Image (cartoon, rainbow, N blue to C red; front, top):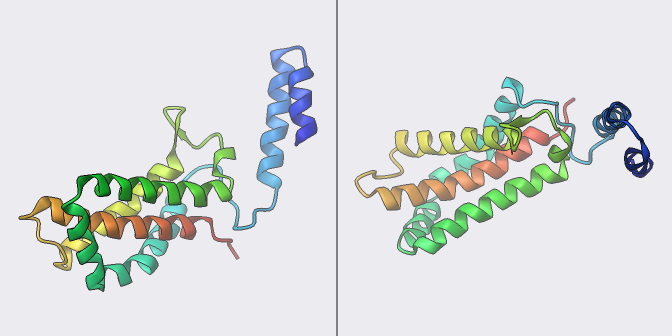
Length: 170
């Protein structure tokens, strides 16, 4: 890979540079991953894997009273709500980065935001919101508390979703 990066800087034409970049993308896809391999785009199968990971990690959080206590605690401290969300995003990005998601260049929304990240967050946050509401774990008459409790659950579910998405296939 280092040699290809050097070659990319040395070539003269845009056409040659694109050929080198294509070789680099092919090499990245061919490398073995410590956690598994990511497909070139986040699809229905990836969403299913993320949903399974969300459930495995999230169900214990939903039935545990501690989740509600933590949510109530951070609801009274708005900076902690933001910190919780940022930490959750950081965990998910760290897991996906370890799996090499940054190397999947075709997987970008508007050419900037990784669709895999958006998909994992939508799956996990949607599952947390749905289950916390349907199972009566939150009271939406106090939206800040309910949202904070759901956020705590969603953070854990997002970690599970990202792990579910990157674990090796058979």
